[in-house]
Image (tube, rainbow, N blue to C red; front, side, top):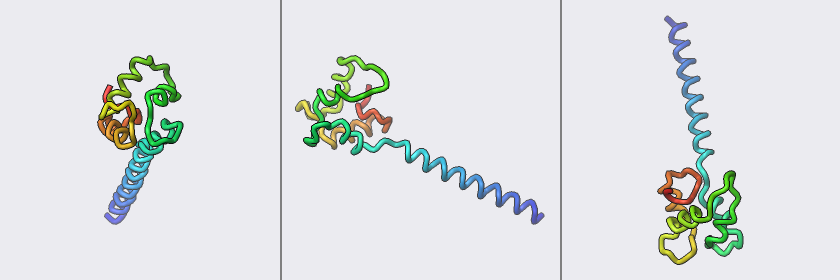
Length: 104
C-alpha cells in the first residue's frame, strides 16, 4: 500500500513538473509586441511607416499589395503611421500569432 502511494506521488510530481515546463515554453513562444515594434520602427521615431513595414525581413516573399492591406488594418486612425498601441491592438486581434498585422 505504501509503495503504491509512493509511486502515485512520484507520478503526480513528474506530471506537475512536466506541465510547468510546457507552460513556460508556451510563455516564451509568445512574441513581445514592444520588441517587434522596435525592430520594425527602423528610424526610431515611435511610429512605423508603410515603407518600414514593407522593408522588414520575412521568411517568405509577400506581395506588396498584401503588405499594404495588412498595414491598413493596423493603422486604425488611417493617418499613414502605426504607433505602438495600434500595433499591440492588431497583435491581440491576430491572436498573438507574432505577425502583428491584424487579421488577414
